[in-house]
Image (cartoon, rainbow, N blue to C red):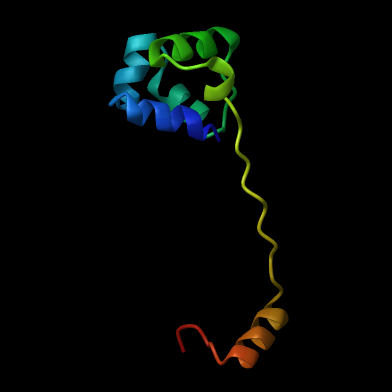
Length: 89
């Protein structure tokens, strides 16, 4: 995910579809870039940084959320018993 890219788009008052059209990138491709599902090409990085008037390296700093650990059912139930929190029961 590129949170700085998303933030800069918002700061500049752009919408993704407007930005995509302005820099000649398909809207779907731009969305995938913003959300980290696709890496931008060197030319896409330059175009976006130039249009958004931002430092390219800063704009494309990655943020990776820490993976969540799956809690086995028996551990979850034991924790609920200890806290008295039984969810939606």
